[in-house]
Amino acid sequence: MLTELHISNLAIVDKLHIQFGPGFNVLTGETGAGKSILVDAIGLLLGGKGSVEMIRTGQEEATIEGFFELKEAANLRFMRKWPLEISEGLAIKRLIHRSGKSRAFLNGQAITIHMLAELGEELAHIYGQHEHQHFLNPERHLEILDRSGGLWALRQEYQQLYEEWKKKSAELSELESKEKQRAERLELLNFQEQEIARAKLKPPCPGEPNEEQELLQERARLVHAEKLFSFAQQGVDLLYAERGSAVERLQITWQRLKEALKIDQTLAPLAAALESTLFQLEDIVSALRSYAEKIVFDPKLLEEISLRLDEIQRLKKKYGPTFEDVWRYKEKIEIEKRNLENGAEQISDLQKKVGELAAGAYLRAKDLSAKRKKVAKELSAKVKEELATLGMNKVRFHIEVQENPQGKLEEEGLDRVEFLISPNPGEELRPLIKIASGGELSRIMLAMKRILAEDYGVESLVFDEVDAGIGGGMAEVVGRKLKEISREHQVFCITHLPQIASLADAHYKVSKKIQGGRTVVECQLLPEKEREEEIARMLGGVKITEKTLAHAREMLRLGSKAKK
Image (cartoon, rainbow, N blue to C red):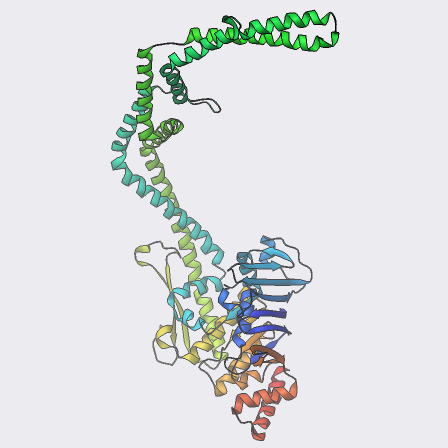
């Protein structure tokens, strides 16, 4: 159960710390006092959607923290799926930042909002006013039936098969539609493959120049052959061939150094270095002569290389933009051709797979449908029994499960589900949306919530103004039902009815005031005297008389007896 709630910078809440106990907890206060903010805060702790609009004006981040005390025998599915560390309870923290980011922590460990929502499903359920409309919508009835009957896992198994079937069916349709274009595409690919093959491109090697780069270098050498020959020949002349060349001068210097060595041996390293330089210069001269001899003056070869480069350029424009891209495109053609050539075989295999998936999904859907009909009968009886305890003992309630026309598979299975009701004896069953009044709908929702709480094993239930559309004696009946539920579950109820508030084990008053020029929300656990005044306010409105206070004391006295 939820034992502590800390809220900071949420809506008009500055800072709020509330401690809750077991049993029946009610929250009352003037309209707009901030009661629904507390429900929103609990919703965020359970993984509900947050938004920057929730953050208090002028603040960067809203923080909600709560502690859920666990029973010793607690066996949460969440903890089996996500083995996180738990001590004696669950400390949950939710942060909403103005940047739009939302973070969650469980016992100090970061978890995803998705994980928090999974955990929240097992900790508490919130019934808000908006659920009236959801409950009236027949599209929600199938979900309610599956969840209440423990069929959600089976439904998800079916949906996995259904999604796989739809996916494979789409692939099959795409392949079949492409079959008409397959021959044309193959013809084009064959042409492209032959065009690239005729070029006989050399495969590129990583780290080495590709064929185009080599040809560009060769062409540059041919275009500038005369200049390159001149450079090489001049180098030979200056270094060696001419009178007074570099080699000749260095040889003279070396000979003199050798003579000097007879006098001073410290010149030996210089003489050795100079001798080494002479050898290197002779090697360079030899290399330059060899280079000059290899220079080709061949206009015909230059033309052949230019034509080859033009051919590569054309291929790059069609399949490039680079030489490597052309080569990769050739590989892509080979892969696509194999796929297209295997198209007929793929279609045959996919047709078989689609058939198997359809048959499997249909069998699973039939099994799900049979279980839904059984659960519908059991749930109808439970709801009728619960409604009788809420003063609706003449009401007939029926959950109708019908298969789709022609047994067509849909995302939820084969079935359409609708809740039918007959509020008065002698009237036929009709859709809930056309019959139920606000008060009847509140009681039906309360009955459903009680049943779902039992089926889910959820410990905490939050009812946000479950009293909509009811009053008088029926309000007391609803209050007593909430009181009965609180014997097995922790119940929170936001109410405007004193008949319900007087039955609570703990009564919290929510109010707002101006502090430092800003509106702040307070939530106070009321002691006996102040509780009388709050019940009197709910009974009598603006002016509270002694008679109203006496009435409030009497209601609390009777409520106290109901607790025993």
